[in-house]
Image (spheres, rainbow, N blue to C red):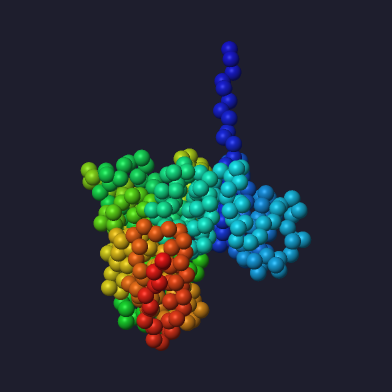
Length: 406
């Protein structure tokens, strides 16, 4: 009698993590630590936090690490890096990491517009990109989706809301979807009115009720700009018009999004607010494996709550819908203006309530193009940041019209 065939385990997927020292990056490394037989760390990158990066390299033993900030690269101590690990430096080092033929999947965990270049380089080589960097699709959604289709690359969402939609949709075609509903905690100022937010401090804005995230994303949650960006991201990722994308406030952050189908059925994805779960699902998709993420305490559950967002107090949402409808250069301008405005708020140079008006002013005063090139988007990114830099905390400056390209 012949012995039963032994099922062989698949070869480990070889992973590069861009932005490994940030909140998403460190959660990703926790997943990699827990699944060493299925996931192998091939490369890690950081902008300037080389000490943390080198500590990660000692633990995970990647082939390469990259420090993209030239100033940090000049001052780092190479002797603290294992000699078997190759050090890459400078802005171009990310492209070297993500385009290597041995790389199977790239995790794009770099915050802000800086994440676009690494994602673009990976997709050009037909790689799978697990992206937490929503700004990639906010800035250049049609260009990025077209590139992925032409090159055979794949985009897998890591944002908890878009991962939930991805899981609920399965292979359902867009025409069978009635709507998707993005959930949001409401941030630290849920229930307050604009008059209550006039003197918001940085410490108050960073006091998120359910998630532990980096400062920029946490401020975006406080203004609800994160939901605005997620509306734009969902519009391109799932090929849905803005009219079929909605937002609902869910303070417990357990239900991460809903999908309603044409027949009236609604599917949702539930889990504790733990980014390791959507990260792992993107890395192991379509398999589901035991991992480090927390589980729902079913015996302790009682009730979940929902409420409609306050569009008057949090005007970022309407800004998100407008950008999703218009497309073109709008996303790049609003994204850059928001990054600059949040940076100035964190530095104490801009009031909390001026963040969204700064983005609105940049949007309304830029020269719109429906079909921009990457070069045009880069130019407008710089222009929007410069305009927001001209604002003061006491009297916002009138934004000047962006220059037209010849």
